[in-house]
Amino acid sequence: MSDRLHASLVQFGSWQRVGLLCVACAAVFAIRHLTLLHGAKLDPRDVPDARLWYTAADARDYLDLIGPDARGVYAVILLTADVLMPVLYVALLGGLIARFCTPGFGRWWVWVPVLAAAMDVGENVLLAYLCVTFDGSVAALTPLAASLTTAKWGLSAAAVFGLILGALGRAVVQRKTG
Image 1: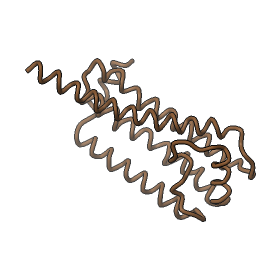
Image 2: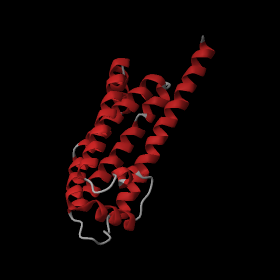
Image 3: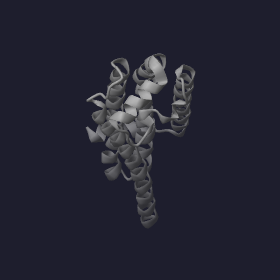
Image 4: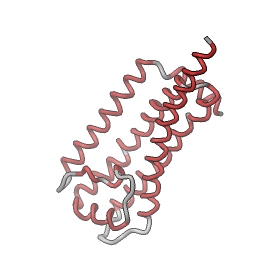
């Protein structure tokens, strides 16, 4: 399975596709942000899924402050644009890892962005549920959503760090071999 994913990402990871994926990620992020700005009572830069960590009280306060209309918009974004974004960054980071890291390392490391995406989608589903069911109280599922958020960011950072180390490792191997 790792070999097939790695081989697919090597073939997929051309410079043209990497460039298109970068543009797509930026476009989805911009659309997400502008949509949140349009529906919110306050600047949505502190959305829970953009933080490294948040408490149940932080999430409750945020959902209360943005109001019911913006909660609906946020839930829709979480289940549309925010589900597309993990697909894009798996393709982007996975393609770069497969292309620039040594094959032995890359075969396994391509799974790190996949795991980050799984955490991201889980976080999105939970946060959308919290938006839709918000009643002004602290929700019991919020710590799980916050844990998925932290895992998403940690795995995303690990994917980038592994990409850098793997690319450096490949450069060293290529330099030694000729």
